[in-house]
Image (cartoon, rainbow, N blue to C red):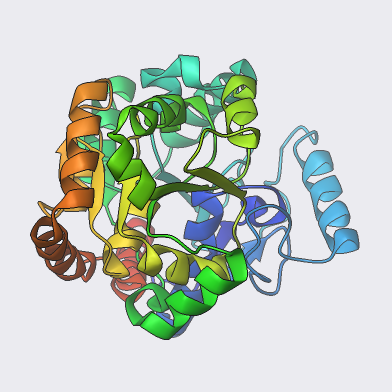
Length: 372
């Protein structure tokens, strides 16, 4: 059967989302660029992916409410959305729809398995939602994409899904991160008032990101290091972090919290940093690590989940549960120019593996095989 039409559940583009929205926005854009004779459509009836705003919808408020209302109704029809897909659709790629159409082949992307592996870092509602997603989408799907080999192996082990059903296709990194210049970095520093050299963290302030431990370790560094290097944190508030957010809003000397930083400023923010630190407890991929490397910034990150796979030997890896390891790594990276230069060079080479064009091409081949 010739692959003629793919419909992608793009609901995360309409709500607050970080990594999944980043993935959908760039993935859809490049799928459409690479598709030859294949119609790529977005549910719920979006002409395009809009603009990339991790904190809100990528379309107008009225369009957002109308489409989320439609989704609510469709999921309460006994046959779900089975009736609205036309007969030309070969593949429906699900995200959060719990009742996918029955006429098309069903696929989905597995982003991580944190709700199974670290349930204490999620709302109970998120855990229940992911378990429903696994039962109603992942297990009956005709094919699945995993964003890393680590995530693929976790899904095989935890959900007992056959390995041949899951294809590992890494994310890409947007071109501005590879093309960022010293002038871009200087503009962002000036706009955000970043006057001193800094160690950077980018991510949602939530339990899984291990921010509390990062703050403890920075405050334990030698005074001479803290006087020379600030710790800058960027990212929106998450859940169950009232204590951490209180510390960030009334920070110790040398710590500054920027809150959410828009996509247009991220390349410059990364490039201007002396080093990037990301001691996450678990990642299905780890966008910030790859983005930092593409920007030429040396990286410290965790030795768990997909992070070593994405770091590709270019980062300084630590046990995220060990404050001593994290402290030693931060001190070494901040005080050794040669270590930073070596890590930055290796990181740029490693980041070149993550291309949205290549991700789209591999995804289209995956869809063709599933539909055939």
